[in-house]
Amino acid sequence: MLAIATASLLLASSAFAQSTTSFPEGVVATGTMGTTNPPEPTLGTAINQTSYARLLSVNSIDDWCIFAPPESQVIADSETYEVAWCSQARNDARVIPDGTITGVSLLKTDMYVQIMGYGDLTKINIPAGDWGGELDPHGAYGSGNPIGGNVTTNMTIDGETINVAEWMLYVSYEQFCFRACTWANSTYSAAAMCWHELDEMGCEFVMPGNYNFNGTFETCEADVAYPPGWYVEGVTDGTTSFSSFAQYWTGVVNGVTYTNGDLVTPSTVQSTPSSSNCQTVPTISNGIALASLGVSGAATATGSAATATGTATKSGSSGSSGSTTAESSSSSNAAVPGARVFQAGLSEGITLLSMISAIAAIAIFH
Ligand SMILES: *[C@@H]1O[C@H](CO)[C@@H](O)[C@H](O)[C@H]1NC(C)=O
Ligand SMILES: *[C@@H]1O[C@H](CO)[C@@H](O)[C@H](O)[C@H]1NC(C)=O
Ligand SMILES: *[C@@H]1O[C@H](CO)[C@@H](O)[C@H](O)[C@H]1NC(C)=O
Ligand SMILES: *[C@@H]1O[C@H](CO)[C@@H](O)[C@H](O)[C@H]1NC(C)=O
Ligand SMILES: *[C@@H]1O[C@H](CO)[C@@H](O)[C@H](O)[C@H]1NC(C)=O
Image (cartoon, rainbow, N blue to C red; front, side):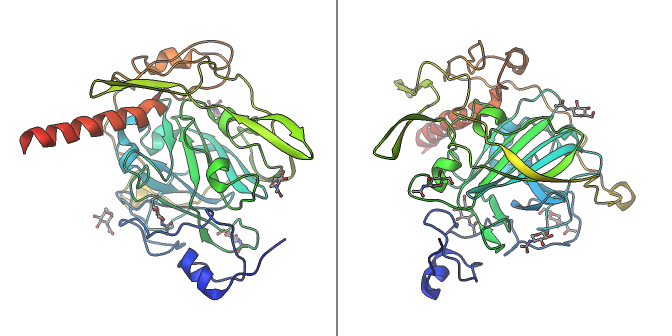
């Protein structure tokens, strides 16, 4: 059921919206484009492997982008300034070198597009062993992680390209999952469907689906998942009520202790949506010979292992056992069985702490 919007409403909702579809509130980004981005998504831009463009487009199995560091560095330390890496030359962004990605599953649903991938992401500057972190348009500074990061997709209800207001990316050295929220209704807002505060939970919890696709490149239709962390509580008079899981966080900021969230972390999701009509392609190579252009995919600098430190502590079991703290190393998290834990997802809390200490430092020096 589509409502037809007036031209003025569409202009208010997006500079790029030109169709007659009225997207529900909260779906289309209303702000300006990040300063390092082209004014609109553009295919076939010049290759620039030192670009700082931060515009992702997710359009098809061989036309998508993710964020990764500009130089080799753990995600936790580079969240605010990650750059766009695309499977094609587009958006003035960097090109993902052929051979990086070993499997992709792209899901189109009524409320979001989701892309899951495996590969050797050390080729796009994520250090080996880095369990990565979570990026979204909010971030500690409210202007996105990365700052000025934007996302478009044409996998919308009518094929129109929109700038999405809500998206989330989990990325590690060997896996990523990304969701752009393209629709909403009174049960599920775009913000709920792309909920960005479960940064310690892995792809399979936050973006459930069939993750057994390494080695294949597929595009599928899929049912809509429950929003991340939502569980059905009951149905009364035909209306479903939900409870939701909030990740546990406690920390000391300027001497004040803050505590939030649930002590027990659920080990499973409400349900894993099924997918259908999968179409596979043999490869998503772009054929661009980066080396012959005198550029490589990744910078040569080596990154340090994840070493998040700070006073924040998150706990709760993940999968069948284990708890994590800000002080734990990536290797100890890697040993946690069950759901994959993105240790560096802690960085949002860390970033907040460092921001507050930065503000304190400024105050002292003035
Ligand atoms: C770009 O991203 C920023 C930060 O998330 C957001 O405020 C803005 O609305 C986005 N603009 C577009 C055109 O997507
Ligand atoms: C590549 O991107 C960098 C960073 O945005 C910019 O300084 C440089 O001029 C670009 N190079 C070319 C050839 O456009
Ligand atoms: C979306 O973009 C892809 C790749 O750029 C293109 O193949 C596809 O036709 C586009 N979809 C629509 C509906 O225009
Ligand atoms: C919203 O969409 C979801 C997923 O398709 C559906 O289960 C739910 O019933 C819808 N809610 C309303 C009020 O239409
Ligand atoms: C995916 O497959 C590649 C190639 O077989 C393999 O090297 C890699 O370890 C696999 N990734 C994961 C996360 O299993």
